[in-house]
Amino acid sequence: MPLPAMKLPGPDNPYPITLPDGTALKSTVLLRAVLDHPQFQVGAFTYASDFDTPQDWATRLAPYLFPFSQERLRIGKFCQIAHGVRFITSSANHATDGLSCYPFQIFDLDARMAMDQPDTRNTTVGHDVWFGHGAMILPTATIGNGCIIGAGAVVRGHIPDYAIVSGNPATVVRKRFDDSTIARLLALAWWDWPTAKIEAAIPAILAADVDTLETLAP
Image (cartoon, rainbow, N blue to C red; front, side, top):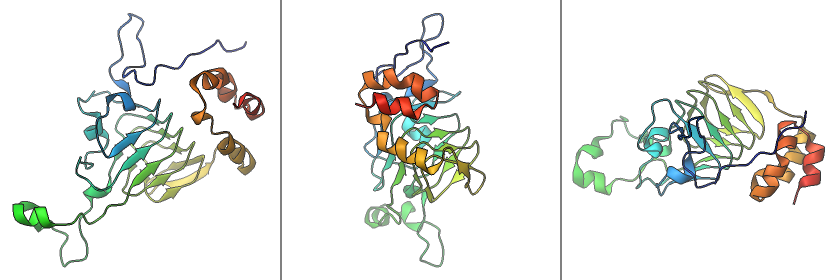
């Protein structure tokens, strides 16, 4: 049976899921519509869910990323972030070049104003990445497109496109597709298509029909 036509929510709608009684499900949000943080950048249609709905989604997801932080957290389009996921960004790191890692300066106003942030590297996530329950993303991680981050995984370093990772430290279990298919998907970059084109392509995406997806490309 063919799939019915599907529509994406408005990319600036904070609550994309409507319950049967017509009310909005407040525990799932399109992040771009609810974030107001200069160092936290999120693409269209990326959502996060949390059973304990926060007032401040940026602080919940990235508690060490402050407006004055020198690093950035960048997350692409169409990512899916489950309950308990945390991004531990570079501002969480202490200096390690002294005899102690204790941050003495932060307790003295003058010293704090003069101190340099010891780590300013960014954390970057590609498009269409699924973060399972309780995953932790460590500072400076770079996650490719189409990855699946297993529940409870602790991710550091570079994760290649369309990899499935799990464990602590997270390791690649396998690739979701063969190298040829991955190359075709990266060339298509369907997440960058106009919304109407993506909606028309949803059946092919769900069916893993790359041939049809290629015929629908703008």
